[in-house]
Figure 1 (cartoon, rainbow, N blue to C red):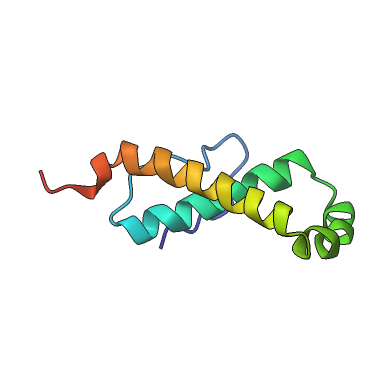
Figure 2: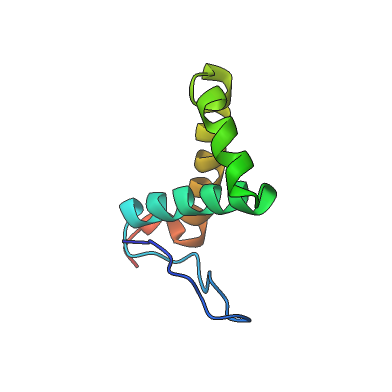
Length: 85
């Protein structure tokens, strides 16, 4: 699974976009999207207070899906679309 763990201070939390499978690539894309949200809004109380609003907004959900898709497209390219060598 492409789940990232917390890295020590100064360490790289994302050493590579290379994954073993498309599923791991998709999971990494979701992780990147989530990381983008938490980096943009680091205050968890504000983030959680807004969740109910955007969770019910189809435009927000579509936008979130688009962000994941763009990340997945980048990861797929980095993995040569998981083609055999």
